[in-house]
Image 1 (spheres, rainbow, N blue to C red):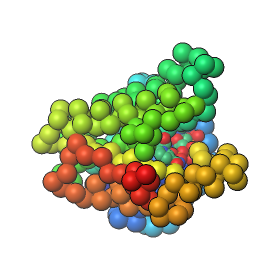
Image 2 (cartoon, rainbow, N blue to C red; image 1 turned 120 degrees about the vertical axis):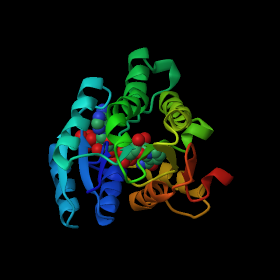
Image 3 (cartoon, rainbow, N blue to C red; image 1 turned 60 degrees about the horizontal axis):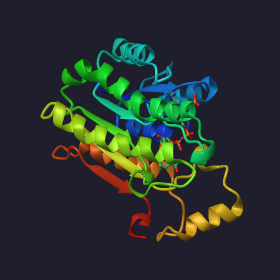
Length: 242
Ligand code: NAP
């Protein structure tokens, strides 16, 4: 039996990753923070493929909650083979108005959350016989930086450093990689005006925003890529060529 824990998998990219892993035969630990109904819906989606699923509420920025999340998953499925640190939050505020508390909050969820969950999962991953892996969901903004969301971009840059450091720490037992998505259609990007959406689309050579399933494909590739660790896979419709 093989199982995956995907943080922030009630909605958006995490939900698509859950569906992909379920389709590939993995039992899935769905994690959410507040949206229980969406998490239960994601459980049904996984179960529709024949795989098992549970929904576990946990704020990944809280180390104790992260530890309980891993424990529930291991208890339920008898082990843990892969972790996808996908939970993340964004906020659009210029530095002039950004409070230190808001800066810390974004870092806490996006960086500390990945650290907390990976640390809690280490012994279970080490016991896995499925070439265990951790995949961190970063962002194209880790490379480019971004106006009015410096804390988000900084958190995603830190996640790439964490990825390489953990890849070195845990080799050869656990592979650790990152995916850096460009603009993907989810709730996180739904607040753009039509003008902002058009301007963003014009920067993408493939001419459209990405779909959550296209990030799930990249995560599945890294899960299966037995000679790849410490890498970042950029999935952005060619936007990084701009
Ligand atoms: P989304 O639609 O806003 O979904 C966010 C998910 O994270 C939800 O499941 C949410 O749970 C969960 N979450 C938020 N805070 C949490 C916390 N403290 N503890 C546990 N779970 C938490 O976001 P998305 O667009 O799918 O983004 C997923 C990841 O991709 C994020 O790391 C994001 O930064 C990254 N990313 C997204 C894009 C994009 O264009 N969409 C681009 C680059 C990178 P609830 O349902 O309970 O709220």
